[in-house]
Length: 388
Image 1 (tube, helix red, strand yellow):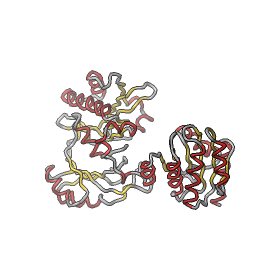
Image 2: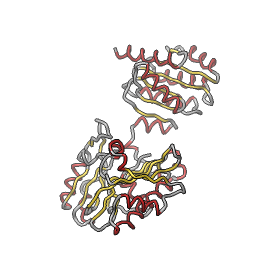
Image 3: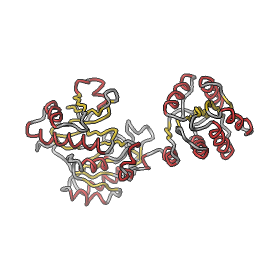
């Protein structure tokens, strides 16, 4: 689950991470009071779940409270387009009014899970304020790494990173506190990503998180009921939100072949073989291993709400989700929505013969494929014919 910058900073503050003072607002007129609390001058930052906001015009410096109101008015309500939003952009509903800082240097800190090593790895770089992916691609030696094996980053590891960043001696204590606090937050919050970019060194020899990004592990949210309240449905695709309400995983893609599967691995294989057959997936919808007929019905309805879809492929391995349950849900949904798009089904496993009987008796025009290759070729051909 993604959260906003201002939410990430509030969480990090609780772990001793230094962050600028600020207030989030949704009405431009509120910016004046917020800026006065900060001394009159303030940075106005759009709050959306995407990076690159500054380059897109979503971060501006206000020198007076009156200017803060004007700039907040410009940003609130704008559709902000960045390299992470896609060309459609994101509507800005909130801005963070934040104090300014005396910036001497911009640095980078981040934590991700190293799946090969099976442990979190702490990264630091003097190349702050840049896309870390670009730094990793062009100058990987510029990224310092410290895996932490004992549940959190140890102070000596933080000192090694701070020395590697060539920080002045007067800033080392502040840097060690920042790094160990960030590591504790990553572990305690069950985060999948914790990133500060840029981390700044101020003229007062303090290190401060000028920006912050935290992604939370959806599978661990049951341990953090208070964090669920940070979810912003406005930042998620409507069909993804609808799918989550029924316990389904839906991801929107750019093609025209809708995919319903059970299991992430089968989803990856299904999308690959559609591409191999010359098509392009419009989405993937994973109903999971234990879906019931009602969930299958909702899944099918969600797939068909995408106007880009020209054909539907259902690829199911019947285990706990039996093939007859799948067939029942599909038939009910197809009748309910008066299905007119080509539908190809490939299913194997428990009660497959009974499932095929249900499909055959439905009166629907359904193509039952023999194997994944056959299914992909038939659905891609159907999508191309529908588009022609």
